[in-house]
Image (cartoon, rainbow, N blue to C red; front, top):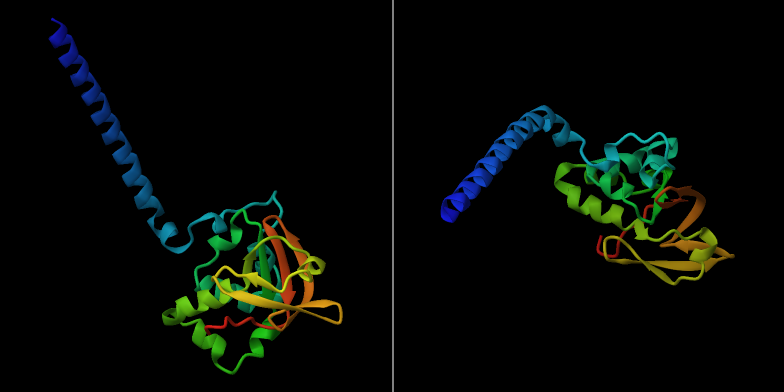
Length: 190
């Protein structure tokens, strides 16, 4: 009798799990069919609308008319989600004028799909963990960047110079700080 009860219990559990698995399968299939197009283009936390929180470093760049080239590069390299992480992130954001100062054709070439990895490497060289003010940066000789390289910091006339770039402005973000710079930083390997 005990054996029959145990077999019945095992059978009941097996039926329960099979029915749950089939129910989830239908829901999952329906959800993936509905969201396939959305997932292929814009997925991740970078694409969640947030009207209540402090802007992220990415939303600050997107909202700036002086950083349209930087935003286009971030999108071409598919780095949007990295720039909305909890951080803290410190982003050195070159202006459009800084990109124009690069040799002719450089930006257009980097934006090509086949150069996505090189572009991502350059963009990651503009990001470091931390949330340091312009004045606090004067205490460093170099910073470790997100691409695993280091950028040199010098103090010239009392101002920190990051890899040869001047900080034009600093904007606090919900996940760090954006330092607007006047030059595109190029990693030593580029």
